[in-house]
Image 1 (tube, one colour):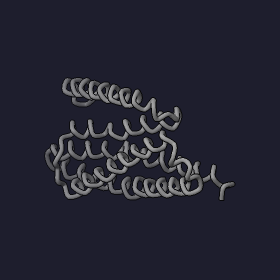
Image 2 (tube, rainbow, N blue to C red):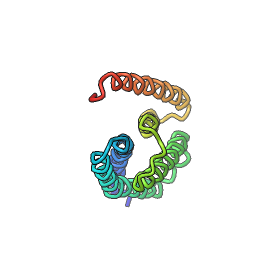
Image 3 (cartoon, rainbow, N blue to C red):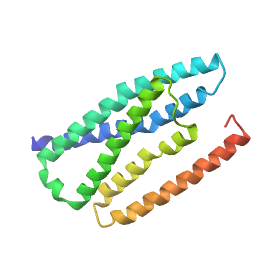
Image 4 (cartoon, rainbow, N blue to C red):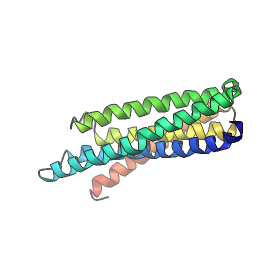
Length: 183
C-alpha cells in the first residue's frame, strides 16, 4: 500500500478542492435564495424554486460526496502513516478540519431550512457566513505548507486580520450595492 501513498494523497487533495468548491458556492446560493424570497410574484416563486434545485444538486452531487471522499482518503493516509498524528502542526490542522466539518454540518442545517423555504437569516449574515470556509482554508494551507504549530499563533492572528478585511470588503460591497442595486 505504501507505493500508492502519493496516489491516495492526490485523490485526497482533489476531493478537498471539490469539497471547498461546494462550501464556497453553497452560501452564495443561500444568499440568492434569501434575496429571491424578498421579490414579488411570480419572480419570487421562479427564483426560489431555481435556487432550491441548484442548492440540492450542488450539495448532494458535489459537496457531500467530496466531503466523504476527502475524509476517507485522509483516514487512509493516516492509517498508512500514523506518525503524522504525533506532529504538532498536524494536530492543529486536524482541529481546523473539525471546524470545517462543523461548518459543513451547519451549512446542511441551513440547506434543509431553505429547502423548506424557511428564511432565518439575512443575505448580509450569509455573506459573512460565506467567509467561514475561506478562513479555514487559509489556516489549513498555511499549516500544511509551513508545517509549524508554533507559527500557527501568528497564522491565527493573520486569519483574524483577514476576517476583519473581509468584513470591510463586505461592508464596502453593501454600500456599492445600495447605490447601484444591479451591482
